[in-house]
Length: 478
Image: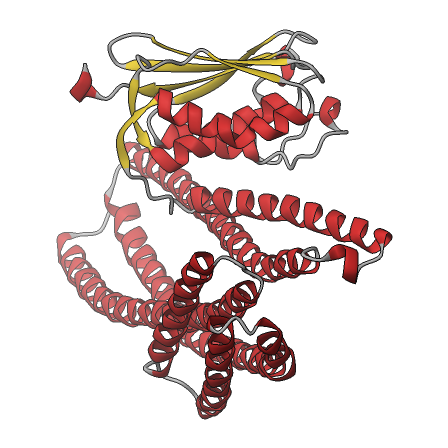
């Protein structure tokens, strides 16, 4: 035991050391938080610059594409509508460029942006001449001017944008590296102070405690140490979980960006394939015409997959915006059936619509509800037999829910696979010969759930499936 004369100075020394190390800790925490904030600001600014460059590139490509489509349109009203889209893309380009010019740029980025402005002005002048030819219905002169002048300038613009993106990414990497190094230095300083705090408190505290407490109290301390170890392990597991969630968010961002980058050139491919098919008998041999149709079919399929990837990425990132409003099952079903009717007629599949004007009115997002119905209806046709049937019906379950059912006479699904089909990228081996990505039903499940509903399937193998969705009824009409 330590006498009272010795214990008092030790307690005072312990308190003084504790105050000192707490002061160091608060200082280190301040610099650490400052480093985190700087890293976040650097990442946010460079992400914004990258998005603006991408917006400029997309707007320029789509503006050129709309101009190409104007040259191919016979109806003046269609040309006028396409001209409005052409102007809208031009506005998007200017807004993105002005926002980028107001951002902090390096000398090299500023030089490339100034050069791109000169080329963009040339393109704008050339495209206005092409528009004048279109308005005068001088399509041959417009096409010749586009091929001879506009297309080379567009290629030059594309190269400048690629160069600008490369410089921006390199600058982003350097800025982020510097910010991370500064953050890392603050973190190391804070860790060093934390180690010092732990050691100082441990030495002084243990010296006092071990000489002033009874054996029973020592046991309690040991239990407390064990609890501390458990808490420490819990913190480590929590950090591991947060790391996994961050990795999933990174994957989602990657899918979103890659899908956007793929969709832009794919739309250009589809546009030019449609352009070449306008007069196939004169410009293409039979084999070339057949190949061009296959290119367009494959392109549309790939575009559908990319759109599904974008939807999945938005859902996982929590970026889906809904406009909840009263929607009649009658209207939504009729509009969706009209979109798959030609696909069903090609295989002599009959769609029986039992939904009438008295169908329930539910609370949902109109666009997303049609996306869900279109996905299930297209699957009902795709996985059906030739000459089969699809029945669509709706009813009220109770005062809160309404159910819509879509029953097909197709190949069906086994019980063990019923839940698998709603998982991401899940494809059943029995469906291997049919086009699909395994994303559609996963997106469907997510969309129904965020609208406050449920989706499921009842089935019998070789006797078709009955997919159903349940959504809340609009309370204002109950």
